[in-house]
Length: 167
Image (cartoon, rainbow, N blue to C red; front, side, top):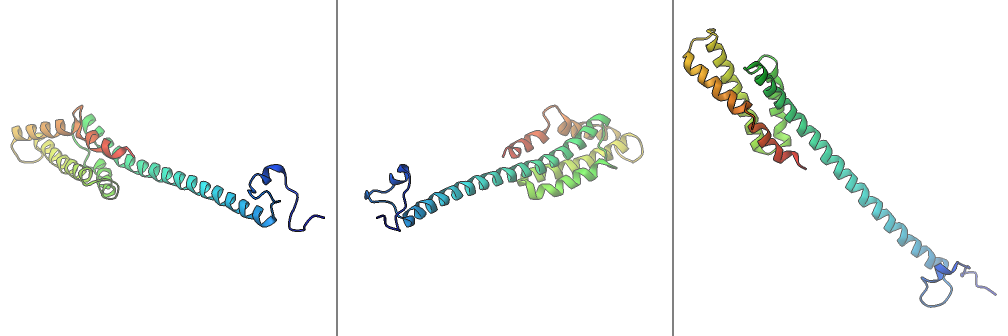
C-alpha cells in the first residue's frame, strides 16, 4: 500500500531526489518555490535593465533637444549673417536653462558664451548699419570674429556636445 505522503511523479522529478525514496509533496513544493524564485529574479533583472535603457533614451532625447535648439540658433545666424536676437535667443536661453540639469558645466558655459557673443555680434551689426554709435571697423571685425568662432565648419557646438551625447 502506498503512503499518502508520497505521490507518483514522473521519472524526471525523481532525478532530484538523491536518497532514492519517492519524493514527497513538500520536497516538490520546495523545488517549485526555488524555480519560481529564480524565474522571478530573472524577470526582475530584465525589467531593471529595460528600465535603465528607457532612462538613458529619455536623457538622450532631452539632451538632443538642447543641442537642436542651439544648432537652430546657430543655423539662423549662419543663414542671416547675424544672430536672431528677437526670436531665436529665447530658444537658446531655454536650452541654457535646461543644460544646467542635463549636462556637465562645460556645455552650460559654452551656451552662455554663445548667448553673450550673439548679443555682441548683434550690437556690432547695428553699429555697422549705422543704427548705433561706434567704431565701424571694430564692429566689422567683432562681427566677423564671433561669426567665424561659432559658425565655422568645425563649430565648437558639436565638439562640446558630442562627448555628452553618448550614453
